[in-house]
Length: 296
Image (cartoon, rainbow, N blue to C red; front, top):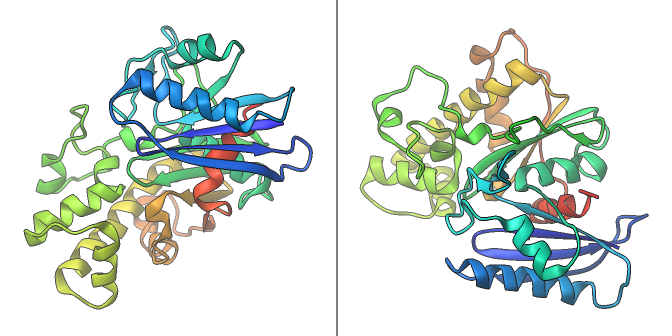
């Protein structure tokens, strides 16, 4: 049995897959404890023990925001502050008593979609998460591409391609980076920009509803979002030129993305044509947890 854990800031999900067919055997989802690292470890451990109760042979893979530092093994570049700087792998292995594998949650999305999801027919799959945070994973020939710094796909950390406008120059990520892609393409980033333009706070889904009904400020905000997305996507298209781009996370449910980005990206890439399909993740919200199971 292959067990995957999707370790998010608000929810923690576990899945058990058949190792041959990849069919789902069981899935459990619980709320993540807030800002209590030890309590979070205990919750993950309990989930693993619960979902593996009827099996004596199983592997465990975990997807989480951020990555493990290549020298110290501590969590780095995570948008979940309670995990930043923690020795998650060793701490959890001490509790469980066996080896686990950990990867960035966007890497897990990419692996899941490349193996049996929306990217299974392609050699190279670049998968982006557009959600509470922004990240990406790159899979070539069904294998994750992982570099010496463990930073493959940390695209949301990059500054949005310029020239930046005054707003873009003024917005910082929680780590202090100015103009990071994540603060514009994430759900909270869209909400922050709408508040900047309108003076009102709205959730991203409400902003999209207003855009579809023709509300002026929402139209400005969403048109700017699509343009920023096209600028941002151009960075990895110019470098990697993947066979397919797969989108996951809450913002990937905005259907207009799949028409607007291809229309807008050409001025930012080194070609006068853009042939790469951009598609929604086949497994939706479960892609990350399935990919974690596929780490073994």
